[in-house]
Image 1 (cartoon, one colour):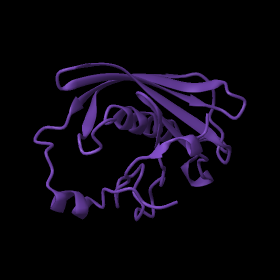
Image 2 (cartoon, helix red, strand yellow; image 1 turned 135 degrees about the horizontal axis):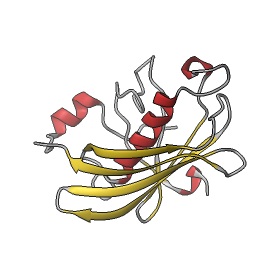
Image 3 (cartoon, helix red, strand yellow; image 1 turned 90 degrees about the vertical axis):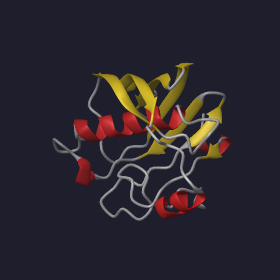
Length: 158
């Protein structure tokens, strides 16, 4: 599956994971690629390594966490969610500079809570890291058009 098959999601200006104007951030993009499924394709630059050639675990967690949030926003990209609980399993070192795929799926929704899972896959398709998360709707999350514009929350052209 490729992101080219999906619908691009909004980004913001300064988010660490997706901010288009954050010079220190990852600058990731996200696509809805099916009902309840989000995909990000990304190669992590060397500046985010822990050991030489290996992505720092905090950056791996950031990518997983962002996809958990993205997948639980499906259907309403202005319904922001935040991590309430995340369980991560690191299986293999994640190499820098290699094309990665991060797949997220919604498992279920219950009121203000959403439950999702995510896998970070290496170029050979093997799973390097995975997580399950409970995401909560952000308190007072109703945003005006003006607030969304301030965030820069929109779909940016490729």
